Amino acid sequence: AAGFPDGFVPWPKDTADHYRAKGYWQGSTLGSILRDGARERPDHTAVTDGERRLGYRELDREADRLRAGLAARGIRAGERVLVHLPNIIEFVPLCFALFRLGAVPVLALPAHRETEIVSLARLSGAVAYVIPDEHAGFDHRPLARCLRERVPSVREVIVVGDADGFTSYGDVVAAAPSRPKDGTTPEPDPSEVAVLLLSGGTTGLPKLIPRTHDDYHYNVRASARVCGFDEDTRYLTALPMAHNFPLACPGMLGTLWAGGTVVLSTGANPHDAFRLIESEGVTATALVPPLALAWLDAAEQGAGRPGTLKLLQVGGSRLKEETARRVGPLLGCSLQQVYGMAEGLLNFTRSDDPPELVLTTQGRPLSEGDEVRIVAPDGSEVPDGEVGELQVRGPYTIRGYHRAEEHNATAFTPDGHYRTGDLVRRLPSGHLVVEGRTKDVINRGGDKIPVEEVENHLLAHPAIHDVALVGLPDDTLGERTWACVIPGGTPPTRRELLAHLTARGVAAYKHPDRVRIMDDFPRTGLGKVNRRELARRLREA
Ligand code: J2J
Image 1 (spheres, helix red, strand yellow):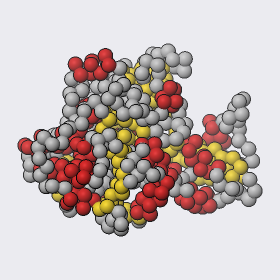
Image 2 (tube, protein in one colour):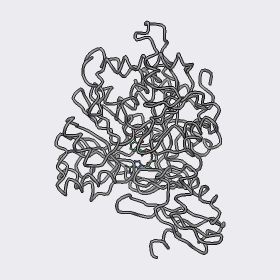
Image 3 (cartoon, protein in one colour):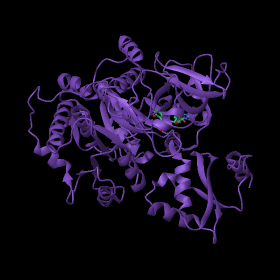
Image 4 (cartoon, protein in one colour):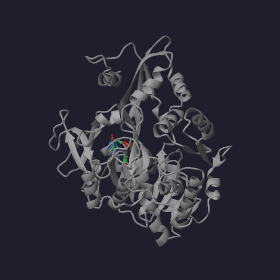
């Protein structure tokens, strides 16, 4: 449709009109989220890492200066900027600067390496790449050099820290006039794409998820309301903010919308997190199940209690009931299960739900506007209590991936429902229980591993004739990855395969946990690898 960048699939016009009439879409931009706080409580801390602190007014001004600095460096509305930052303060003003400029952040995970970064830059046509100098022992600047060589659209690299020949973040902020004249910078159109999120949910090559100002603002607002966020909320970002959950569900953006304080952490080990919770008076945070388990074990072993914590959100992969039951007694806070996806739909358990539902379900849809149906393989809806694939459309669920026409034809139904690939069951109360999935993705404790992509990297190893990656149940991670290898010559060791994947620049969370050498794979009638049978044999061996 006119006015949309190429590759964006808009909602049908009557649907969009309906979402506006219902008040889901209010014509607000994400860049405006800070403005109320800056006006009403200018000195209240908006974001801190425990050492540095930015008040609302400071953050608002830094975002404006950065916007002007980015514009001065030639970055324009509609262009994409690949953001590859851990949870450091600069992440926050940078997001707001891009939102206000109308340039679109593409959010890469800190764990991503050359393979993922190159493919995200290509797919988005990014013009700039923003990195820390070093983080967690990894120097990002050689990666930036490599990216510039491999993806010519990237014309600018901005470094937080020692720029080493690139542009420094500090210089971009400093170069801008400190008070841009009002009225000179138009706000972006709220119906346009504000951010591109990485999909964990799809098969094959990575996909980007276009979220508009209108839909994501609603996502943020409605999440913050359901979680009761307000000015007194102090939210700890324990997961990487590039992920939808800690970014916007309610996450960093929801906390700022509510006028609270975002406390940044670059890691989530219980020792450091408990200290930060204590010193900053953190009231809410979000974790994936393996981290929740690590916090519970630490609390049980006497590492103390995160005393001020009131709300622990857990999502990203299935939380075991047995783990859920330990949260209240050991951490002294309420549990909220969250079943979400960067494509849109969010399900939350509510604070007034019966405890059994909070412990045993993954919540119910956030919005009255969410149209959820659970279908059998033939497309017919199944009755409550029966397992089927969840399909959804609604005011904050996308209608198509970014520039993925072919994939969109199968990832969405003709009437615009997103096929989640999740197998779920609905209770009479409307709460959902996630029972499995149909898609070729392994969910390793919330990290989504695209099976085909990793197999292709492994196939490039000279000692591998054929390979199948399967997920096996694991007490801590939910699933762990096994690479089943038919060798071509001397069987490779796991160590050799990890070195191979590292050399190819594949993020570490995609590296197989175990390697099993085999003579052949069980196959289906059509000659495809029978993964279910393969997993069964591995479990029994
Ligand atoms: C089982 N599977 C779950 C859960 C997600 C909040 C929370 C999570 C995500 C997320 C998110 C699950 N139990 N509680 O974006 O805002 C699996 C499903 C889903 C896929 C989406 C948020 N919560 N999952 O995990 O885009 O398979 O988003 O389709 O990374 O994770 O992955 P992702």
